[in-house]
Length: 394
Ligand code: PMP
Picture 1 (cartoon, rainbow, N blue to C red):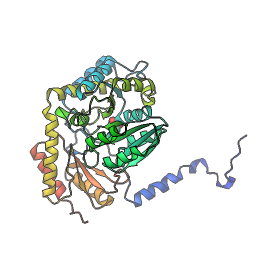
Picture 2 (picture 1 turned 60 degrees about the horizontal axis):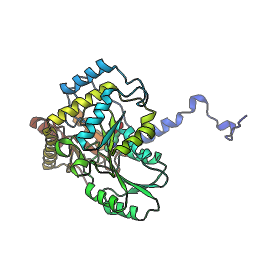
Picture 3 (picture 1 turned 30 degrees about the horizontal axis):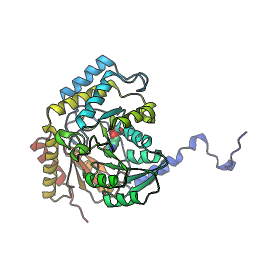
Picture 4 (picture 1 turned 45 degrees about the vertical axis):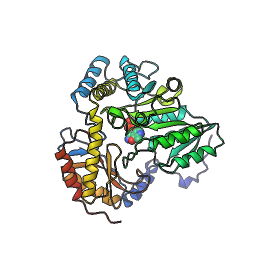
């Protein structure tokens, strides 16, 4: 029999085992970090700049019809893991078209961008690999680093010289440089050319998370790697999500054919996960084909972002300088950010509210999505509502 080393009087009763969660919630509340779920009605009259629907495609008939057709043809679910029954012809078509659109040899679709990042980081590394990861990388990349069993060097944000130094002084045979292409909080772009030369000077591969660049950057929205001349290169792997610019759900890894083959045969989040639902695959394909036919959609999203940021700055707010379709506005602290976001909503504008721990630099912000389908009137309306917030004190 196994005996517990915890003194009997300290053993918690079943009713009390989760008491510590209330204490943790209380600590979060005192720090202004309570998070609550809000369910969104289908007919919500607010102007929604809190979502990630960068091109405004989530309700586009070409997208919803493709999703509905996929459901009617293939059913509600994919029925199994990708290697067993979960790969429909639609999955294969999406993979082929995604790779072609973004300029890579091959692509592999996952049930989310999160799963795609975990796959790339765990399957392309080993204990003899050093991962050099930007300090502001997305949580899914950080979790992928943790799962990788590799040594991880957290490099200062957007600093290719620091990346080069970490690579030069490593004792590991292999190395992988990992970065978001566009950072989700401020919408600033990573220095891809600098990261690529640092990686190449030291024999490292490059893994780029293009969640916020795909559909917005590059010719016709073909992504940040294409814009930087890095797509299709033998040492470059990219990940994307289908849930932002494509108005669907799911993720993908793009890269050299041998990388995709390796992921197909070894990545745990591919092998042990159910294949992406046909509706999501259909919606993503519908959106991708629309984007190919109407490449100006990507330009418009970038133009909206610049206009929005310029007008917010002119109104005296501390707006970020956007490189893609995200604009943030600094708030004095987490409570103020929450209050601002609530006031915006009351005034008819939904915005994102970023606070620690979701902001790596500890600065709380409002986050506005510069959707490519916004009209000039809607941009003005958003600026008017946000400018009514109290000015930021340093
Ligand atoms: N990477 C980045 C940079 C993201 O912002 C997100 C989503 N917020 C993801 C990956 C995860 O993608 P998904 O939502 O498809 O899991």
